[in-house]
Each structure stands twice: as C-alpha cells, then as structure tokens.
Length: 197
Image 1: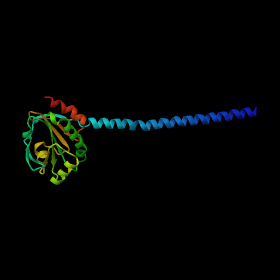
Image 2: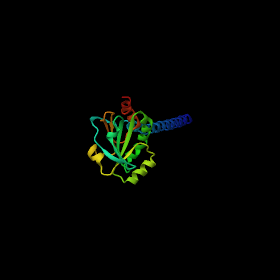
Image 3: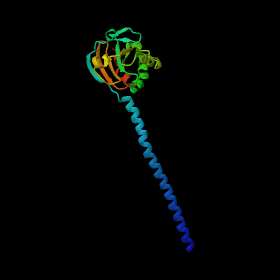
Image 4: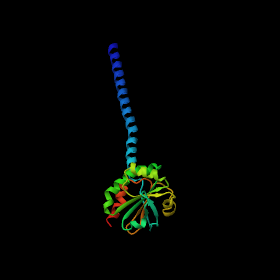
C-alpha cells in the first residue's frame, strides 16, 4: 500500500514537473511571441511609414523667377525650363535626409528624363568645391545649381526646411511641395501622372 502511494506521489510529482516544464515552455513561447510581434509590426510600420511619410502638399502658384549658376558657372533660370515638368530640390551637403534621398532622385531622373522631366538640385549655401565633390560622389547627372546666398530657399520658395522639393508643371505652375526626403513610391504616385499631360 505504502509502495503504491509512493508511486502515485512520484507520478504526480513527475506529472506536476512535466506540467510545469510544459507550462514554462508555453510561457516562454508566449513571451517570445509578444516580444517579437511588436518588432515585426514595428518594422512593417517603419517600412510603410518610409514609403508614405512624406506626402506632398498640393499647391497652385506661379513658379518663382529664379536665376542662379550651375556647377560650370553658367547662368541658369527656371524660366528656361518651361514646357518640362520640373522637380526643384533644395538641399545641402551636411543634411542627412538630403543625402538619403539623392539616390532616389537620381534613379527617378534616369527613369523619366526622356519624358520631358527634369530635376534641378539647388544647393543651399555650401562652398562650390563641396557641392562638386558631392555631385561626383553621388553620381548625379541631373542639373545642380549653386545658391550661396540662399535666394531659392529664403526668397523664391520661402522655406527654411531641407530638403524641400517643389514640382512645377509644364505651364510653369507649382503643383506640389514636399518637406523631407522623398521616396520613389511618392514620386511615381504624384509626379509620373504629370508627365503624360
């Protein structure tokens, strides 16, 4: 009798220990799921945010009169680009989001330059040598203009945020304004339809 009782106690202990181990295992799996879920959801949200966070503001006003110089010292003007869809990007070499978006801008320019689209990157006050080196290092093939006295940002477009971008239609009307780095998805969504007009 005592032997059977001891066997039952031992069996219960084993069952209890087994149940505890199983329960602890389930608890660990649950904790791991709770810990991993926010990371996965957070990553998905971050990717979605990166794609949709910088949505342009629809605007409608005449493109400003703006004459500057390019990297070769030639006089250039926004008025000379009438008839094209123009994305004006105000940027600086020291600006992290400006650096981040440059490969995207270059890729979009390469894909759509033959469709009557041009991109003008107007540097906001950096020394010419720094701008030339930046354009070379990033492989920029679109026009880069120099603005050592901040005419574009302070007078023409009236912004102090970098990067800032403005899309001008073929008739010379500013249609969109962006503040912050632009994603390729946003360019395709908002600028590409303008190229068919």
